[in-house]
Image 1 (cartoon, rainbow, N blue to C red):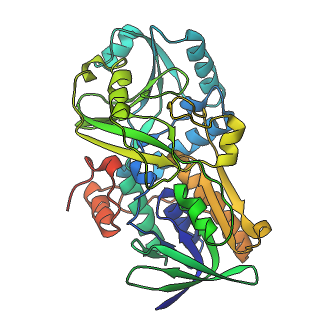
Image 2: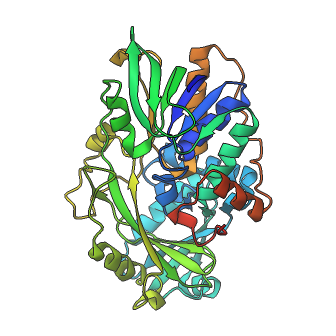
Length: 415
């Protein structure tokens, strides 16, 4: 069966469904496809931190400002798809106090609430913290449950007329006169899609998708491990206040915490080594902040792959040697318009962070709307997502769109 659509979005992660929602709210006819169910790629395999911007405050003012704005928006529209846990950056005995001061100054400069407390006060607020904590900075971090967030965005898009096809893998493009005129797909509902415009939001797979249109999008995916541990009683996100490195974050998940993460370059986002030393590294590093983690066993382990744009990584000198310690401090997102590559109705969106998915989607939707001559503005920053006031309703949407993913499988109710 052939399906006609104004805009085809390839990729059912947060950015893809966010773009579908944004365009559908503007009255655009949208179709979204994914190969393995929604949130099956990077979004659903993240550590789920809702950044306050504090992580980037001393090095990337634009990134920090974007994060705190989007943090506040998601807390407003996201309901039970997010958790307003708060966060704490801890300075341990071996950490550089000048780095703490620079981060604090950056937070205050960029409008990120930051309260400094001494080690004893920090341990009163978070009893699991160890004696090595000398002081801490309290910031408005939070937690994202990606399965719920992605499913709610998909439901909103569908409510406004979008077609969501979660098990419809891309197979090939047909190009005529510098345009994509047809898209062959797998799955059972349709076999050919005829779009006016195509958005490549396939994350770490963006290079493979673009290559089908003879377009070069050079990606540098990096893998990272997340380890779930049975551990209750930690309420805020705990961050180590040092330059980003392995095992510097602990994400609360009710009866579990998620320890993360590594950053190791891989050639293929589908096939890479999942090494025991990475898991061991999480316990070694995170137990420096929370000593009681030492000696515990994983409840679950999963890896995700970041959709990093290689030219940006090259400017940061972050080409990884597989040591796991060569990473950029912060990374933006990139909208790649492919008319100059010979395909006038094709755009890729790459990079970015889960926290800024809505902003990425808005920028992408603005670009597409301008191309189509649609003048309606974005509404996603102010319109609350559907189902978010009831966790059971959200989890039913997760099941409906096959969006259940490792990042929050301990939180989302099973069928």
